[in-house]
Structures are given as structure tokens and as C-alpha cells.
Image 1 (cartoon, protein in one colour):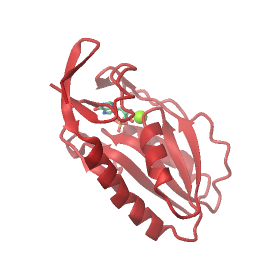
Image 2 (cartoon, rainbow, N blue to C red; image 1 turned 90 degrees about the vertical axis):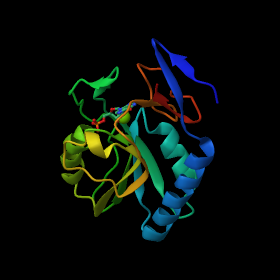
Image 3 (spheres, helix red, strand yellow; image 1 turned 45 degrees about the vertical axis):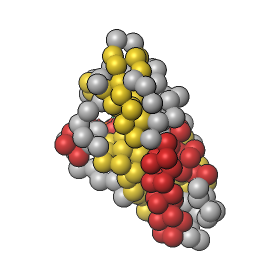
Image 4 (cartoon, protein in one colour; image 1 turned 135 degrees about the vertical axis):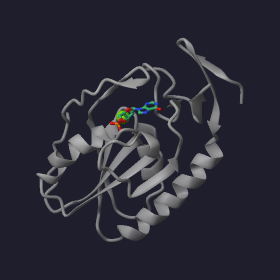
Length: 177
Ligand code: IMP
Ligand code: MG
């Protein structure tokens, strides 16, 4: 796989589609076991999680529902620190088993600020599935229950993650050169 340029930056191949697929299979199997008979409601956080959520959801063999909400806290390669409130939470979460799906837990601010809103709706349980986490960058009390890859604190694009809007459609993950 060649290096790629997005806007002003060069990115190099980091995690292949084969590795992504095999890790997703592992996570999906755990979810299939943990949630058998529970009909979980998977909530994908847009935009970044849409590809991970779709691929993971396809691998679920149990009965499950999916919905998406929109939040945002990032512009460029550094956090703006702004977290926008959830848009599109129409489902009744009361008594439901919720699996939040994120593209990446970086500082953890997005999920830390969103969790109280979820919990206030009295779900039966809430777990977090994330495609990536950057343990070195974590600043909030957020922990993924299902994580495909723990990565170092470098900026990545592809598989749903963007650099200023671009790169989400790359099938593999790239890291800033
Ligand atoms: P948080 O810092 O955990 O709140 O992460 C906020 C959001 O920043 C994530 O959901 C991503 O959309 C975005 N983000 C964090 N790190 C990266 C990265 O390396 N590449 C692309 N987006 C990122
Ligand atoms: Mg995001």
C-alpha cells in the first residue's frame, strides 16, 4: 500500500483490512455471547463510527437493533474541546441494553460528556465498543468494554476516521507520517 496525501499531510499504511476484519470477528463473537437473548440497541456515534458500526453490526448473529446519533468535538488534528449535544436520540432507552459504538476513544471527552445523557434515560445496561483507543491520550474516566485496537498517540485516518473531512472512505487505517 502506498503512502497517501490528504490536504497538507502524508499518511502511511498502518492497519490492514485483513487485520481489521479479524479483530472485528473477535469482538462480534464476544458481543454475540454477551448479548444472546437481550436484543441490544447499538448506538453508533456519527460521523466517525459509521463504517465500524456497519461492519460490526453485520457480524452480529443475535437479534439486535441499531440507531445513530451525532456529536462532534474535533476539528483538524487537535481537539477543539467542544462537545456538541446528541442529535437524533429518539429511541426509548429505558430498560434497554445499550452498546455505544465509537470510532476512537482519544481524550475520552466525547463519551464522558455523553454518558450522563444516556444514563439519565435509565437503560438496563451500557457498554462501549470502540474501533480504536489511544490509552496515552486518555484524560477522562471512560473505558471501552470492546476495543478492536489500542494504538499509540498518533493521528490516524481511514475506516471512517477523517482528517478535516477527508479519508473516511479509505478501507484500511493510515497514520500520520
Ligand atoms: P475524544 O477526544 O475521545 O472525545 O475523541 C473525539 C473525537 O475525535 C473522536 O470521536 C474522533 O472523531 C476524533 N479523533 C480523535 N483522534 C483521532 C484521530 O487520530 N484521527 C481522526 N479523528 C480522531
Ligand atoms: Mg467521532
